[in-house]
Image (cartoon, rainbow, N blue to C red; front, side):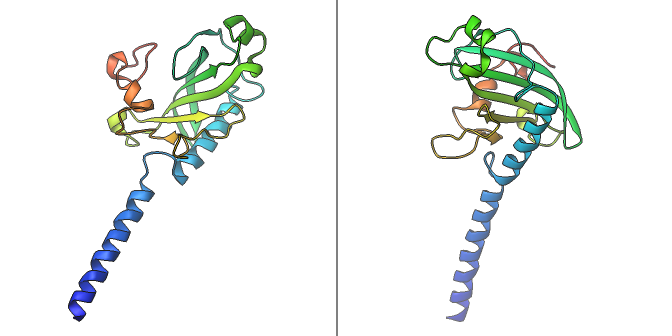
Length: 181
């Protein structure tokens, strides 16, 4: 009886530990990803790539899921001591949105800021080490319908989402507007 009880306890504890490990290793939306997204936003603001003093780019016609009108900025950025490539896409929408309206009043139409930041090798080698995040205009995080915060390896292994879509980009680099490799 004691052996059976110990075995049951061992199985139960093993299941709990495995569940805790799965929670700790969320591909996105976990505490580590959220904290990193906050550091990334601060670096984006310091570099004038996001926030109040952000540089503006020429608006162009976009497509789902990003927005009817987009602006894209690219460069290098340092976050927590690591310098990596960054792609910032501002997503605009709303009634009557147009390229000229966004150029004249971007704040009125800004719905989201989506960012790809290439982290250090080993972060996510299966997906070119990109960190994905979708911010609201104020730098807080958007969530998916299940309430998960959209930061980290967003929708890794899913049929839809950031990684699933960008895996189809030409050049194998997850970037649609040019080849990085």
